[in-house]
Image (cartoon, rainbow, N blue to C red; front, top):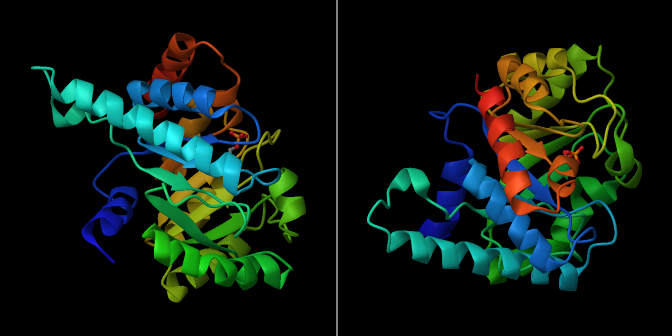
Length: 271
Ligand code: 1GP
């Protein structure tokens, strides 16, 4: 494991930062070019990670083409800004591009890292261990950094819950989420991702986030149905370290509009 790999894990698990925002780009929903434009707008707004993945219709081709397009755009703008006399670390464009895969058949060697996850409340061995075993040697060969993560799907769960055959966590099941968070820590995972499902009508409840926060020292990622800064702030106050938005990012075609929306989102989230 080289220095570059562990840098992404350090970046993601950096506890000195206030809650950070990341976007999720689904390669099945947009062309690589549009994905790259949206990623640039998000980074300009202050997003600190780009996740690439989806629950269905992703494959090696569309995932790789999307990751490559985003990496090229980031490299170009990083180089351009380093030529600028105002260049400072605060304006650092090189945020990690991280795979958030549906399985072993949708990976890209061009990614910096991968959420190497166990869908902890899946009823299927496929999502608990089999896809991970199937993808492990590809990940090793490509030199992609694995980010050890417990993925926990809460109600309503959406497509991720259906595809992953999850035994969903209900909003009142605080003890259950505490047990999952504790188990994730005991397994040596560094991150847990509390997922309500993309496009969820209700996001993961602050009570569940708080219960997870009080049960472990892991980095907590929260996503699914978060569309505004106020909702993100409630999740942040409850203990989330990262807020992910997918649909929100994909609802704007104009890069400037998207940048303004996300700038406002991040500012309200950290208010
Ligand atoms: C899905 O949590 C993410 O895995 C993002 O959800 O598309 O609802 O923002 P949204």
